[in-house]
Image 1: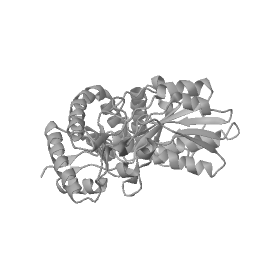
Image 2: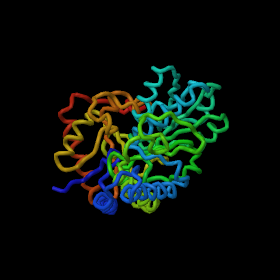
Image 3: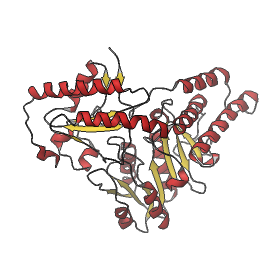
Length: 390
């Protein structure tokens, strides 16, 4: 039985070139980067080289890169760091209802600590209207956080326009770009962001690695206090191997994103077309302005969890929602925000293609899904109409 991995939005397998880079680093570099001897300086040099590589890839200065343990820490540092460092200037934060829980739960924490948060609605495709953001900015607004692309439905947000609005009002702008690595252009100057989060495990790099881009001149309150590593914003002995692996993964992913998108485009369109031939189904997210590897489809009269289990039995790996909430049976907050009823959202499946996905894989998935959905509907007590998709 061949394994077909279609959950790349949750985590990607390690690139072989990244493994080689990490292995070489871990076997040759032993010192603490803070130690002032040859071994320590060797480790520090490896981090400095990685920082330069990341900066070159996303078009910023090396000292604007903070290495973190992943996207969640990066987002926490961005939002809590900005909020607590700028509390004297204001206490208002703007975000959207479809953000990753790393953003939403951080905002809930900040609300308990004296901050006011506006959670913006999105349209039926999951896009934020920049004009809605402009309307709710006040003289107390200190930061706006809108994701680059949604992790569940793949919709790409107009963050360049949002950045323009934020800067015209002297408000900081953060974007969660964790799903963008290897799939979208990442040039922080063009994106008009002040802070930008990335996660290594979404782009064939090691888990537990990430960065926060922080534009020079922006002050943050650190989350972790100690020896003052990472410009005083992230204390603790650095994960040298992880940092080296992250920088290599990012470089490889961004060097081939355009070429890879062309390949994935054919496969995802074939998958969408094949799955929508199943009666009572619909594609979630924007029809064109979406991550090219993301296929999120709802099927009436079946449970998404049942589909995932049936797929797993034949070696196909997909998910019902974000990996961070996949163990919960609650309705996806993203699908709820785009207006999908409870009955329809519970029959939603997310397939996210990757660099190992082939056309034969897609053919097998389509054939399998037709059989699985038909089988589950035969034993389902439900018989909903397409009105549930309106």
